[in-house]
Length: 393
Image (cartoon, rainbow, N blue to C red; front, side, top):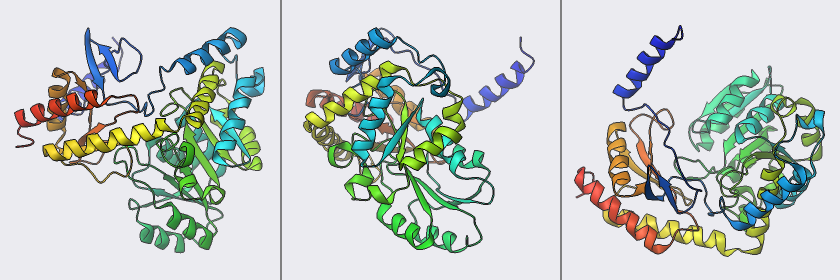
């Protein structure tokens, strides 16, 4: 027995009493509209596989071809073992999508965000961070050792006030998600860019839940608003709508060259496996060739949101295909999730610290690959479980 095991058990017991303990659930199939777990079939509505590409034949074929040619692993850091061609091809493809000069691929969104922020900001600088930013952005800010000013969620007046107070800073960096993953709302990006111009601040946005979902060709919120050139640092992921794994930072050529030399999470990490880079490139090709993928995602989300509202559920004012079904107490969200699992619907309760206390919810995410029959079955299960728990009448 480990010397700390008793302390670990006590902490886990406390999490259990507060309905905050988490568990892994083994999935025995590919991520698709319907999955297998515990010997049963479920309709999956808890995945970020927005376009249904994680098991798409084109992505599997691209990954297999890359393995045949380049093997499985990247060998070491790209600065040590060399940089495999599929990664360069993907980076060029991302830069074209984002309409910027260059891109750099990282092993994950977490690595991309902490690498970029800690390379760009440090002591003497001030970072302005939305209070509901993703944990990877928050941790990047903390690790940078810059001063951190947290502004109220999407509150540009509060951000403006904090910027006015930062005149002694060496460098100012505004950091925000473009689409907030738990609420599905969007950053007020045009207003943020305007403030940045007036206060000589740089802007970094994380498009993890926007890439492949929002904007022309799925290029993201900045592209939707025509602000690509106004953003200094574009971050995004390959593991959600693109169905693969990894992440990127995109922007100017000097930025990317600087990160190659200064981003510790890039320098000291093994390169992204070539199969993942090839799969992500294949996903971008699919999105470009078939715009109905994104249309189907939005159509499915609009339909399911409307049906859940009609059934009596409270939906947060989302602006994207993310549908937050608000429950409130953590234990109630767990019970609702359990009721849905019993009825063959896979939706997991989202609880603190992922969301603020008292705002536990079911984060429902239909994909482009779900059928109307899938969604109707899910609505029936939601209605039955909700009535059984007294959450709706």
